[in-house]
Length: 195
Image (cartoon, rainbow, N blue to C red; front, side, top):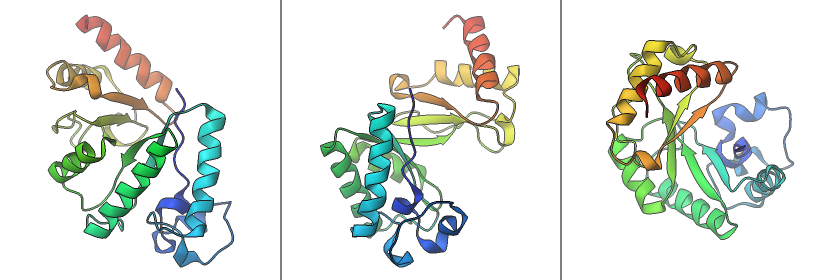
């Protein structure tokens, strides 16, 4: 399944630095982009994201929000409105967040909005994330401990998943240059565990 990311012009403000790093942009004042604002500029950026999702045949999009998208009531309301509008278009939102959001509050909001969150599968220590897997997508990428998903790491994740509640809600996303190799390592560990 191909799942596109929402264009950063929808989610990231000019002060988040991605607008300057991007190779494509849209006309409009920089301050009117990002943070899921209700502006024509954000709507134009969303329209481009929607076209990509339709072309990929995806019913899901990943929304990455920056650390500056803090957990206050304004941003929670903007996220709720964004999710509701996407649901009306037949799309499910997976939210990849960064910053000050606490795991318990994030899970409560994900439940309320009926969305999933995307989190790293491993903590900085190389251990599987200890949070509940309910409403979670787990990302295994080419960074940190999962740059190369060695047997012991794959086995520890299989063990954590085998003992988890709400496992049926969990999706594992393999990304980055080593995605296929990491997927093979994980599959070998699954086969060895006979799950």
